[in-house]
Structures are given as C-alpha cells and as structure tokens.
Length: 299
Image (tube, rainbow, N blue to C red; front, side):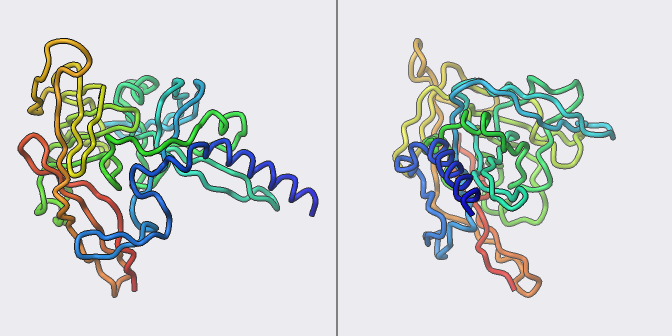
C-alpha cells in the first residue's frame, strides 16, 4: 500500500511539472466533459478534438516509424529530433505497468511541419500517420523525456477543435463520403502554414503528407473571432497572401475566417456509427473544411 502511494505521489509530481501553465491553457475550450454549442447541436467536448499542446524545454530524440510513400514495403524506425522550443500536439494519459499506473505522453508528430518531420525520413518514405486521426506517432513513458515537455495553451493560430488540416471544397465536400483529393492547408503546432496539392500516386493516407507547394513560418497571429490573421516574412505559393510591408517579420498576411457554419454528418445510429462535425473556413477567397470531432451518438 505504501509503495503504491509513493509511486502515485511521484506521478502526481510529474503531472504537475508537465501540466505547468494549465490555468492559462484556455485559448480554446479545453475542459473535458463540457457542453458546447456546435451550430444547432449541443456537443460534449469529450467527443471533440481537444488536443493538448506542449513546448520542449530541451532537445530530445524520439523513435518514429516511416512508411514507403509510393512502393510496397515495411516501416522503418528512425530517431526524430525535437529541438528545444518546438511545440507539439499531445495527450497526457496513464498506462498500466504491473500493478501501477504510470504517466505516458502520446505525441501526434505527423501534424508537425514538413521540414521537421522530413529530417529523419529515409528517401522515398513518409512518417506513418496511423490509421486514424487520433493515432499517436510516439508514446513516451520515461521520466527523463516526459519532463522535457511543458504544457502550454493552444496556439492562437490553431483553428478551434481542429488538428490543423483544412481541405478545399466547402460544405459539399465536408458532407461527401468520398475522400477529397484537391488541395489542403495545414497549420502545424510548431508554427508553419503549408499549402499542399494531393499526390494521387502516394499510398493510401499519404496523399496530403508530401512536400508542400508553398509554406512559411508564422511570425505573428492576430486572433479576433471569427478571424485569425497570420503573418509571414514571405508569400506562400498557391495561396493569395496580401503584402502589408516590405521589411521585417510581418510582410505578408493571410486571414482564416471561421464561418461558424458547422456541418453535421449524422452517421448511422442503428449501426453504432457516430456522426461527425466539420467547421468551414474562408481562406484566400475559397472555402475549406476541417474535421473537429464526433457528436457521440451511437446505437
């Protein structure tokens, strides 16, 4: 009994370190089990995308899998370096080890910027995104690595409840059962905006994970709902950015307007298939959609 309490206390201390800044981590609604309005629906945040965000306080390496981009083959494991200051999306949870619960941190590394996740990729390989939107690319349990992560608030440049991936096509595409294969904008936790064309030759699930047509580091964000205005030092090929200065860090800008017109796919309650929600955004004169979660309705 005393051994369990001792280990439990250690876990609580470690959680306190990782979750430093919890009270300020509310740029978006992050409270589990809260009820929020999504269009005409009342949804539980337990079923919406509530990514947590962590900043690296020191450089570490983590093992990730890379899979063949176009050919058939096995995954290859490589060390991916996460530099100090990098912001990553994650989920702090606990797993059972023997008779005890130990903290573990799931990391969604496939959402990071192309330059970062490509640094360790073998030629012809792409980081393995997993089969679903909630599949982590690494799960850390070692205390020395867990303490390298400091909990921070959701970055203002991240669209609400989104994983950062927005797809061209608007409401019609959001409600379609056919996977979109047009264009995508990715806003990454480490602060990049990328514009991608779909690679039809890539293996399933990898079409929007190849080299962007254009990308830029986000240098500043002005967030006044429904507008997120992102600033860059240069323009982004494929997107209509506006030049606002000829010097400095904030020469170009792009505005993401949340249309606050969520699209609801009802799913199939009789078959236990939950419905989904997508948000619509107006970006560069075109409408994009992004998956924000489930309605939680099952049979």
